Length: 164
Image 1 (tube, one colour):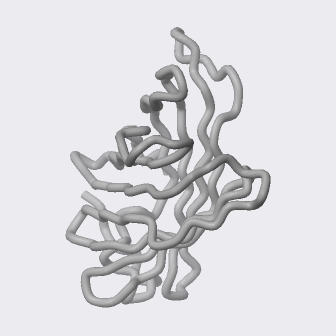
Image 2: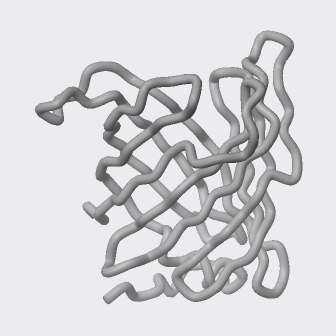
C-alpha cells in the first residue's frame, strides 16, 4: 500500500502515488518506426513545494532484455492545475517542449498537449496524449502521438515497478 509523505505539499496529494523511482519495460511503435521493446527508469521527486520533479530515461532492449542504446530522455514537472486537474511540463533534448493539461482521479492521470514548441531542427511533432495509472502497485502508462505527418495514434506503453 502506498502512503503519502507528510512533507508533500497538500496541492500535490492527488499525484503523490507518482513519487518514487520506477523501473520497467514497454513497447514502442509507430507507422514510421519498427516496433521494439524498451527499458525505462522514471524518478519522480518533491521538495515540499507544490510541484513534482520528473525525469525519465529509456533505452532500446534486445531480445534478451539487454540494453542496446539510449532512446528518449525527458525532464519536467507535474503541477496541480486546480480541482481534479494537473499540468505536465516536459522538455526533450531533441528540441521539443510540451505542455500537457488534463484530469486527475485517484490513481489515474490523463493529459493532452495544450502546447508543443519545436526548435527549427526538431522533427515535426504536433500533439500527444498520455495516461498514467497506479495499478496493482505498478505504474502503467500509455502515450498516443501525432507526428511526422501521422494522425494521433498509439505510440508507446510501459509497466514499471517502484524500486525505492
